[in-house]
Length: 247
Image (cartoon, rainbow, N blue to C red):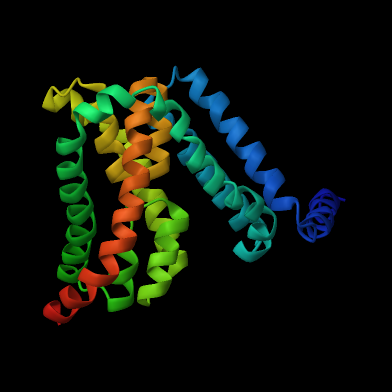
């Protein structure tokens, strides 16, 4: 008798896993629950909704033996919306147009320095730790938003799935640790904070930036978009010679 509930749940899960909407439903429920937890924690950076939702989904898929492909068959609807959501970030940026024009030159310099540092520092550290060439290529676009990063990795011979994981980890790390770092550096300018988060931590960092202030979020959205464009342009040109030099 004690095994009946487990067997019943297993049968129900097998039935549900055949539905393409399973991944979508689980994603929405996990994120909604994570948002509630974040609110209970008064928005503490460590209670990042993305981190909590990802951990919950991974635990559920592992516990039920569900493959990632089955999950993604439904979650791809959310994945598709990443593009429109990124474009929509231009709306709050428009309100900061005046300051953006005044800061154009410093922001472009910061963008170039941040983009190259994010990519090449990851490759060099990975090489020192003995990573394979495919892993190094997958590491390079880790600070770019997921759709662009996966496309870059695939084009250069990396592993898009590994890149996706690295992108999420990078974004979560930036979202969790950015404010503490800014406090230590005594950096209080919302535009500077936001731009740095966008370059280093893409969409997840941008979501956190909007929780700080609209100006911080707007500049983070700008940095995320520009970094994606710059990385997609420069990395295919600069990474192969670096890989050759590293041997």
